[in-house]
Amino acid sequence: MAVAKLQTTDSRAAASERRIELVDLVARMARELDWAGAVADDCQDAIGEISEHNFRHGDVVRLQALDGLTQTLFELAGLCRRLSVMPDLGSAPASITDDIVLGDLQHRMAGTSPDLDLGDEEPELW
Image 1 (tube, rainbow, N blue to C red):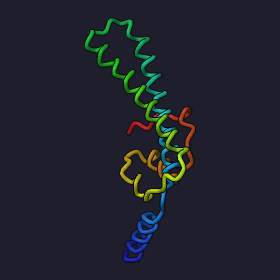
Image 2 (image 1 turned 60 degrees about the vertical axis):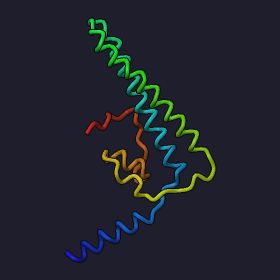
Image 3 (image 1 turned 120 degrees about the horizontal axis):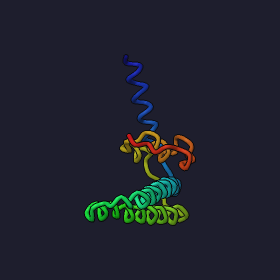
Image 4 (image 1 turned 180 degrees about the vertical axis):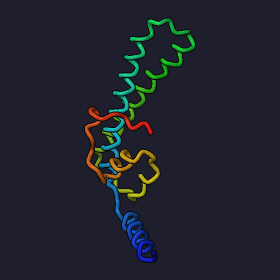
């Protein structure tokens, strides 16, 4: 038991010493935001196709917020792309991604797993 605790402590110490280059992190963030924007855009199109079913005005207004979300995601992706080509952004501790709840996303942001072709993947909803 003491050996396992020591190994866990050692692996945490190693992880806390590891650094993530911020240019790499924001480039990964841009790809994720582009994917999320594309999904939101597709949802918006689907809603438009079914909206012929006479939604109430209040429902339509709520659904139109998806347009704002889509635009926001694409704007944030663009900002991340611009940041990713800036010289000398520095680095951050690898633990900066530890609070990301979605496991696959956390590993992609940390750079500990390869980027996925997000266009072919189902969204990780929970």
